[in-house]
Image: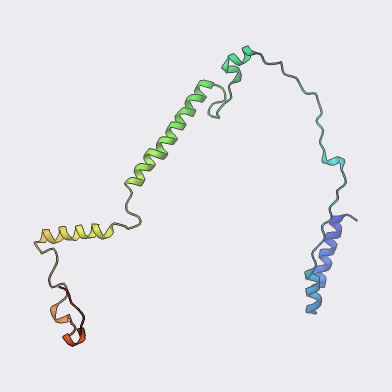
Length: 164
């Protein structure tokens, strides 16, 4: 019997026995882990063979390396023309860096205040401009009606110093 078939039979048996009504027996069966059957012997089917012969390339000379067309490796933009490949690579590099840093920096510098750090100062300027346009004083002295203000009496203040 193969290891896989033994494992399947053990799993089926465990599933059937786990349906038993005895909780102690069910816990004992579930506590056991399934065994892993590992073989350490060498197998011939684990190796591969290549049919055919390996062709030797001609040895490279200094003249071969003097001509860059023989040693050109494409950047992935054009696989046939080295000049077009390099031009497209340079364009993409320039475009990517320009968009990323220049336009990205511009967007970050002129983005609205997303953390709302300066909203109170902006609102104050807007309110002052509105009040000046209407001819009102910058701060209304009757913002809170005088009859609704309750001040503590002298007895309640006691020895507390009030600085005006």
